Each structure stands twice: as C-alpha cells, then as structure tokens.
Length: 340
Ligand code: SF4
Image (cartoon, rainbow, N blue to C red; front, side, top):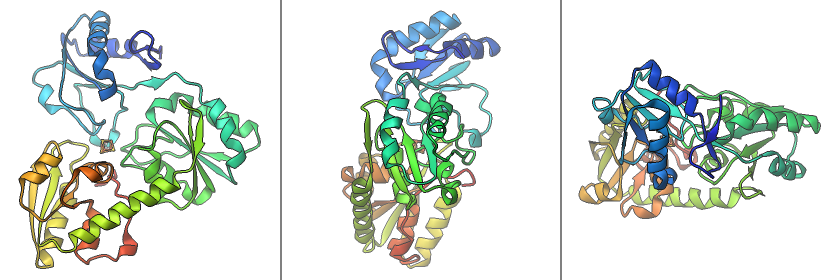
C-alpha cells in the first residue's frame, strides 16, 4: 500500500494505486466519486487525480455520503466503478462489484497523545480507533506494551472492516472485549465515535486526539445526551400516532426492526405507519402529521441532530420505552448490528 496526500498539502492520505488497480480490474472507463463533506471543496483536484491514475472519465456525485452504509445504487447504471472516499468496506453488506472504498488515513503521529494519556489509564487497556487512524493501531499497541501496560484489541461484528475499529453505530469491537478491560483508550478525533461507547459501557473511557493533543473524558457529554434522549422519550409517551422510518440505504435498512415496531406500537392501541426514505431530515419529519417518529435508520440522526427536530424522533429501543413495553432502565444507545 503506497499512501499519498489525497490533494497536495493534505494530511489525509489515500492509496491511489489501489484505485487504479480496481479500475483496471473492471476495465472502468466511467468512474463516479463519492466524497465526504470535508473533501468536497477539493472535488476538482481529487477527480483530476483519479482521472490521471485511471484514464477514466470522472463524475462527481453530489448526493451526501454518510458512510460505508450508504451504497449509491443510483450510480451503478451510470458508472463502471464508484469510488467512495473516507470509509472502509462494510463486509456485512456483501460483495458490491462496482464499489471501491478508498479510506483516508490521517498522517498524524498518534504516539505523543497516547503518551500523554498514560498517567490516567487504569488497569487493563482496550484500544479502539477509527478508520482514519487504523494504520497506526499496531504502533499504539506496541507503544503501550513497551511501557508495561496490558493492552487488548478486538474485532467486532461484520459491519466493521478492521480490528479495533468503531463506527458511530457499531461498538462491538469495544464491547466484545469489555469483560477483560478496565479502561478504553480511544485514539481519534472528535466526539462522534467515542460518545456512543460512553453510553454503552460503564468502563472508564479516555479519548486521546492526535490532531489537537487533547486527552479527556466524555462523561459530561454522555450525561447531556442521556438527558436529551430521556426527554424525547417522555414527550413521545403522549403520542397516539407514530411514523416508523425505514431507510433505503443498504447498510441502514432494518426492515425486521421496523416491522416489529409497527406491530408493537399497534399492539398498544396506538397507530403506526412505515415511511420509506433515502434521507431522514427535519423537512421529512415536519411534512407528516404523525405525533412522533421512530427511526430505524442511522441512530446518529435522532441523537446528534436532536435540536433540529420539532417532534420526538426516537431510536427503536427508545420507542419501546415510550409505549411502555420496556422500562426506562432499558434505555441504551442504539446500534445497528450485522445480524439486523
Ligand atoms: S449507519 Fe450512521 S454511523 Fe453507521 S456507518 Fe452509516 S452513517 Fe455511519
């Protein structure tokens, strides 16, 4: 694997050789690009680079792309190959012959911030990270072991393409080793990935960010989000009609969960209707007159965009609490797991 900056001067590295190889293997003359939001400003430069390594004509897809769950089936008739930047393959979806996942690796040394975190790590350490730092996982583990710490990593379920990798909807790589861990060390940027882990596990979590050299706990954020979720559940307890949202994105489509919710809600004397969509948004929610909504799509929509929704938008487990099928003590962070 030869990594190069995705555009000149960028700290994000990509394997353009692997993209060229994918294009060659498929004899691709038409390639579509899916870019994460942060790379869109450089779409021209990225498309020129992909054109130069593949010789193909390039089309930039302007639809938002949220993750490897977001398979752009609308592009398959228009392209010989679709290159999705910034995500790793989700094996549970199965082989998708026209897709190439071009992960973006962050070229920032994680070891200085890991060293800074060591004084507050207790007991046995479980290391978790994101796709952007996965190429340095072994270095982090060796570094901690060399300092006398007992360190584990785990694979998760088949939504996760790599050992120790977290998704914002899948924490199995952490939870599957929880019993043998006292502290989780999250190496990566931002709150998006680790906050779910603080809600799912009572183990200590230390978040070490190689980009800004911060080492912190997310307890305060966890408490704030928990409060928001409980308030959304309470508001939905008065609802008589529910829209149950089913997403068309292959990696977010939980038909069985949605069907179960419709029958559970109906079984309590309330009304429930399925809504099929490719994009869950405040516009969609305000358009319909249901009293409350349950999203079986990406759990982060209900959680991270809490303030954007006027009506209660719940995750499946939250809906079961709101309609009285589960107690408040059953509240937990929603995950999309491979078997769903
Ligand atoms: S379902 Fe949400 S959190 Fe999971 S991969 Fe897709 S966009 Fe990311």
